Length: 350
Image 1 (tube, rainbow, N blue to C red):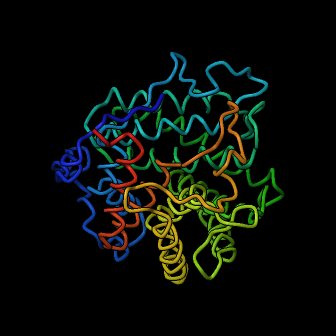
Image 2 (image 1 turned 120 degrees about the vertical axis):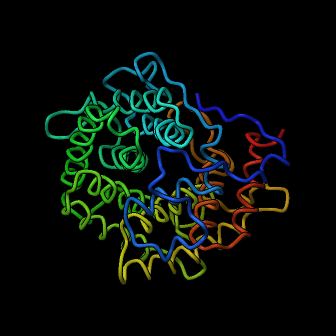
Image 3 (image 1 turned 135 degrees about the horizontal axis):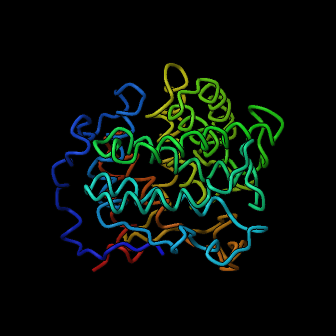
């Protein structure tokens, strides 16, 4: 299960330690990430920045079953499993690079491997739910994690596994697009976060594999996500707003901004993120609690997860979305809010 060591309030304001030797070529972000050119170095700067590290990677660690299965996949049959749960390995891969812990990196790769080992030669995952959304959700986390690993000094140590996983992620990205009938199409138009999820999934997999076609396809999804956004910044979910799912979309969109988006797409996406992040910030109370009034999906047990549990506050997506925007925008309000939500979640409240 995912665990994060509890930290005192005073501890949350400690400056991030010097950047690990594994990322010496990519200095930590300093609040001006929007001015950096898109690419792997910009993604590394974002993920290794103090604001993001403090809430996501300093203590984060995922522990899977012996075979790498995570969450419901530990007991799920091959005929009914969930590829997207294997995205949890991203925490270990990135945290392992930042903390210079190769055993932690290996654990994250093992979690990815469990899912990718079930891939067919044409890129599908038999028995896994939601061939498009499930694959996109997995790739949206797994592909950026591999990019961070590949940019580190640990890349040679894991070269064979990196190559094996990269090929399968590329194949999966092409398959998910074919499954919905071609680029620019999606399996559910009513959930805005899924457009950005698909954008970073295709974009990151494309950058990882050197596949320009995937990168070009990713632009279509980012543009569709922006078109759906309301004037007040809401990224609609099932016809309304939802603080948790908006946060998922924001994190995907911020990563897409720094890794892939350039030119006019970068400018328009930045403006969309300004509006969306401001709306998300408006949902954060002074004690770090999240106002869920009117949320369409994560309030009042309106939806349940595959384990049958009520969906409720998405703490981790919310505080990571706010932290990432704090780095890109340079606005300290978002870092302060991210810390408050992190503390409220129980992970950071000593």
